[in-house]
Length: 360
Ligand SMILES: *Cc1c(COP(=O)(O)O)cnc(C)c1O
Image (cartoon, rainbow, N blue to C red; front, side, top):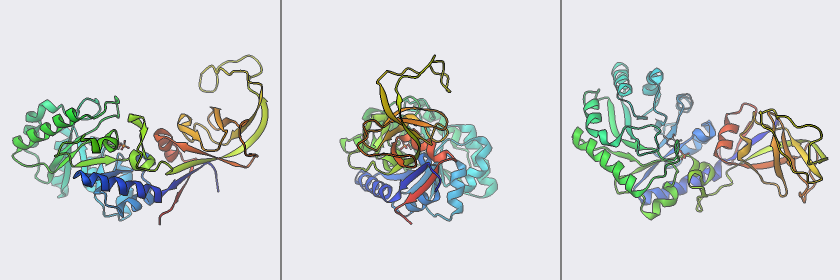
């Protein structure tokens, strides 16, 4: 089997998403399972479609197409605001999308008409993170802009995103403003909106029980929570979820005692940085056949006792193994825990073998 390997435990993720769905249900909240963090493999999509999530959500229409063509019946949501150039595919393939532009809505409306297809939209509100979204004080103008769209394009709700572009966290106050935005749209349109999608993993899972969400918030779009059991923007793990959902495995190609201080004049490394190494005498050092082409190295944490990351180039990861109680030889495998960027990068790298276990 070619290394490096990203080993994914679908059973543990299933356990996580099931717990999230149950806890959210206590608060009257449905869950869309977001698959983009792991590049939406079909094994994951199939597992999720057997759970009680109300939709599978991804940022890429390419991934949505693959899931749809697999015959999965769970509703599909595109969660990156659509490119005008992909709107025909969006209407064809997705059941829901998140939108923040009136011109885009008009194009979608026309595509619904010409394809004789219905499509549901959540209007995004920018509550301060400054990524996508209409300004919440513009409800009147937005409602006026959507009034004349095709009835096949259903405005079914509103959505908000936190913690992505500027790290802004949701609060009860911000959530209440979000709800008033929705209610303003409702009164302008003269119809009720079914879905108030209150965000992603960011603070949602850890603060749900502390009354973060007003009554009307009834949906969340969750990726990191079930994929990694963590909430990176809050800097915590979610204590009632599991974090051992996946590991990255790499193979040792050299193990040797070497000085810790480089020999000779030091210029820039392969990435333009001037490296600085403290002289700690001779220490056991390993080279793993994995590098920046495979994964965002900064997001790796060694799982083997006594292993510490020294540095990495495109194809090599150097580790200090002086304090390893176990003996590791060339050809041996070391394992690493991944954070969100490491998961994202290794799942998109064609050089990494993906193995999905625990579910079929
Ligand atoms: C990525 C994304 C999510 C899921 O985020 P997680 O932090 O992984 O839960 C939800 N909504 C939108 C719009 C996203 O882009």
